[in-house]
Image (cartoon, rainbow, N blue to C red):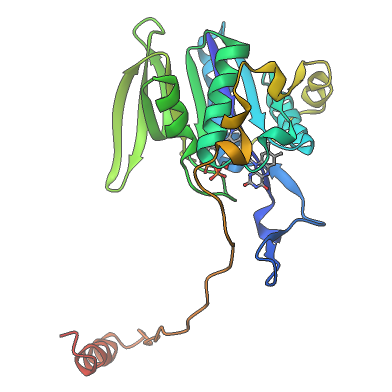
Length: 265
Ligand SMILES: Cc1cc2nc3c(=O)[nH]c(=O)nc-3n(C[C@H](O)[C@H](O)[C@H](O)COP(=O)(O)OP(=O)(O)OC[C@H]3O[C@@H](n4cnc5c(N)ncnc54)[C@H](O)[C@@H]3O)c2cc1C
């Protein structure tokens, strides 16, 4: 059985600042990390491997050359091998072009697979679109916001507990399929010294556009339907009013008075 895990490198979000003149992220001096939701996807893949055995896990990322450090983190966590898609022809990809390139890579370089795991969203781009688009392009069923995954039906199906607004629901699909992972009960693990050393011996393949049987007009900026025009932080509006609740009856009167004054009641 083969599990593919798509991962993205993101800036350490606590450090992110935006240049007010250019409207772009200031990346100088900002650490990059493996997207936390991708870490949960990796951890889920490894958990399935520990539990059921005989599973190959492969991490795939599309990004600039420095994104290889996110893949090294996956190898240190226990993933068997990794592929980085690094080529300036991929630069400027929106979510569609990203999903399209990942789908072409999976078809060209991996062939058969059973399960694809992705994070529910990247904490920088934050669109949560790549996973659903990837499953649509590959023509496989998808389950979003998974928190636990089990193999059923002699490893031909998966049963996923997923988050919904009112709680959780359990959904089953036939494999091959795609699951996006939310946090759930998973924790981000620290690799042992041995795992870190072992990772150096594992395969980290770097692929370019020429390795994929692909029309270059469908890649990067040219293959993208959307373009980010500007990024800016939302304006902070201090319109909230705090009512001291230490004396509940008085607080309730104040609240009603406030709502009446504004004709809400
Ligand atoms: C040369 C180059 C430069 C790039 N520069 C940037 C950049 O500056 N900023 C930026 O945000 N993106 C960059 N990308 C990557 C790409 O454009 C984005 O990954 C894409 O638009 C994803 O959108 P999102 O962040 O909203 O992902 P979401 O849809 O929120 O991500 C959901 C999940 O999809 C998977 N996923 C998303 N992106 C990738 C990926 N690239 N590879 C593998 N799996 C993925 C992950 O599992 C992730 O958890 C670059 C790519 C290349 C090749």
